[in-house]
Image (cartoon, rainbow, N blue to C red; front, side, top):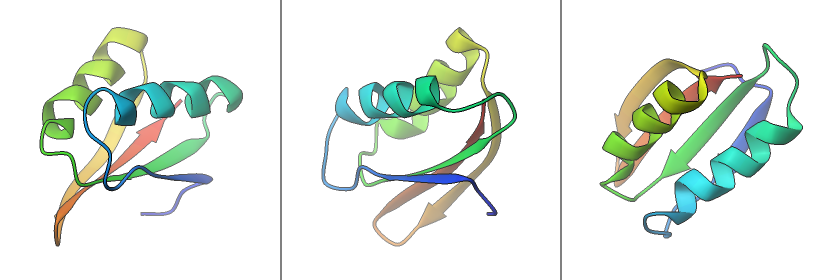
Length: 74
């Protein structure tokens, strides 16, 4: 997953992953990619929902040992 920025929110629970992702995405330029790493099982619902609500593109989702990775493009 090639990316411009990485956000490690492993060990945090809803709504922290989404709040931190929104803050980081707000600082990024259009077209840049953010890799979000999380262990929160609810992030499987929350991250795609955030993308749909705010107009970001969810490029890739991957289940990894103990969590998930999401690649979001602003």
